[in-house]
Amino acid sequence: MAPRSIVILVTLLVVGSGLAGCGGESKSRVIQATIGGTSIQDAVGQAKPGDIVEIGPGRYHEAVRVDRPDITIRGVDRNTVILDGQDRLTNGFLVAANGVAIENLTIHGFVQNGIVFNGIEKVSRGKGVNASDNYGAGNLVLDGYTARYITAYNNGLYGIYAFASRNGLIEDVYVSGHPDSGIYIGQCKPCNATVARVTAERNAIGYYGTNASGGVVIAQSVFRKNRLGIAPNSQKAEKLAPQEDTVVVGNIVENNDDPLAPAIPQGFFGAGIAIGGGTRNLVTRNLVRANPFAGIVLLTLDAFTPSGNRIVDNLVTGNGTDLVYAPTGASSADGNCFAGNRFGTSLPASIESAMPCNGTSTISSVPELRTPAAPPGVDYHTIPAPAPQPTMPVDGMSARGGAAQWAPVNIDEIPLPS
Image (cartoon, rainbow, N blue to C red):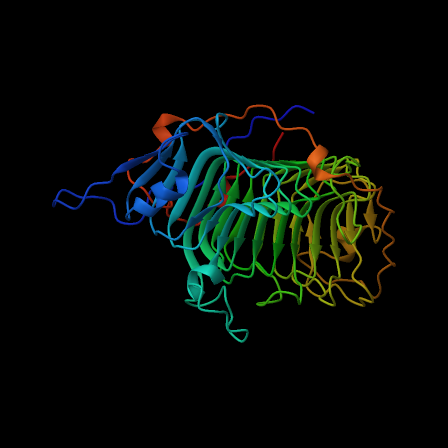
């Protein structure tokens, strides 16, 4: 199905890291990286806060480590500036510094990730990791990151991966062909992260947010033809569990049943939005359709039971079951509620009457959840490359390097997609 035109209505984001004023502060430099000239890694090594590394057209076989804070790395054209890992290099960009923006380029063929913002790398500085530290909380974070106008496809784990990182923007991004997820945000509290105007298709999972809590907004994006669309979740494998306080608003989540997408290791298949053991999430004004197992489902994951989640004002249609509440062994609503949704089928039946947001729940038991068998997976290398994607408009390019400043999203202004 062709992409729909989606206009995001969020607060204006301005460049952080200290805008140059009239008092004679140092000006930004533009450092050129070119094929046959200065490599991207060498250009990054020359950069100082506020500088821009501008990458010329061509195919680069580099794995770039970024440990210089408050810089921007930007391609001159999204579709002709390509980082190609040749299925042997580990990460396209490993960012271990605060305030880095990566913009307007394509990344594929890396063994692990297209872009990874890694708070543990930033905090540890190669001196080792203290297993008792709660990376992702307090000061043990990477603070400030931006990924915009990025095409990431056919990397071995994730397209864009933010771990133990805070105050981030991932927007105007296309991700496909990832055997874990297209976009991943994990182990952060608060995360303060906005994912907007993203298209995620033919990944095992479109968005995965393990123990990603506080200030996470997934808005006005398209998740389709993955095996699972959107999944905020709690797990013991990472710290800061349980997951809480993500808003999923204004998205199109459809046809997440593609057997030609990479398989999820646990075998889950065919759901639009699945909250696995998450708490106090809001799912509102999304169009969720044609997902063969379930449209929106709340379930147990890794012994975490969903609680306090609000599923309100969504259009949920043509799914195997539109709305599902099926935590293992649950005997109450546990603060989860459904209201104002337009839907046809639910489990349990009449779910909005049984689990109202204003009123008393009548749930005393829930049916056993039977998930469908997943078809065999495919080799992610075989997933076709995407068509050219819109390049970054010139008027959106800041003249000073550094990540855009995160600001809370006014979710009340984001409508239901049509």
